Amino acid sequence: MKLTSNLSLVLLMCLPLAFACKKSGEPSEKPVVAKKVLSRIIHVDNDNKTSFSVFNYDEKVRLKSVTNGSTTDVYRYDGEDLSYVEYWLGTNKTENTVSYVDKKPVKTVRKMYNTGTLVKEMTMGYIYGTGNYPTEIHVTEAGIVQVKEKYQYSANSNVTRIESQSNVLIITEFTYDNNKNRFTNSMLGYTIYGEPYDRLSPNNVLKEKIIYPDGSYLEINNTYTYDADGFPVTRVSKALHSIAGNVGTEKYTYEYQML
Image (tube, rainbow, N blue to C red; front, side):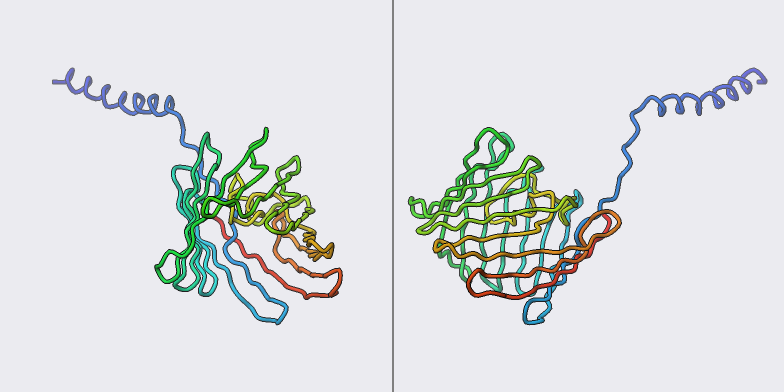
């Protein structure tokens, strides 16, 4: 009886050691690090009217929806890739369905609905050079190319120039700061037609210059303030047209949350 009790005691003492050894040999889980993401934009336009854009994210901290008044953008993913976007304006909806080859977007099919009735369908084809970002996007409707857009990028993937050729040519040029973009922790990682270029560019636009066919241009200059982490918290945008002169000033406030 005493021998049995001693053996039981030894076994009980060994069990914690056995489990401890097993746990120490297992790979430890990576700690979850919270990310700072954009939660809201407060926009004051040139007429002093205020609007609010609210950003929501999924469990992988990917953009899930953006709402602003009667407009709502809804994002869905196939694995890690953005595969579908709905843009709602009241009861009118635009759908973008994105196809990929080798993890690169190669085609977007856009369908536009007016209160449930399909009114237009377009296809955007992506053309690549030697890099990971498209150098051209062709917009086709009813089998005819309506728009060709050419893209140029900086060494760190900022979009620096877009040439949009339809029946006229419009050129947009961008210069940037060296700070974090407000979308730093929810970047797209690739150019997708219809999505803001600043969800791809890692830095903030300081100057945007739009050059029209007649040689006139609109220049938008942005001034930012930043928080301690280098994210923009305010932005003042002043627009000046080469002929019409001062166009107006708009103000933005960026709010963030940790997810």
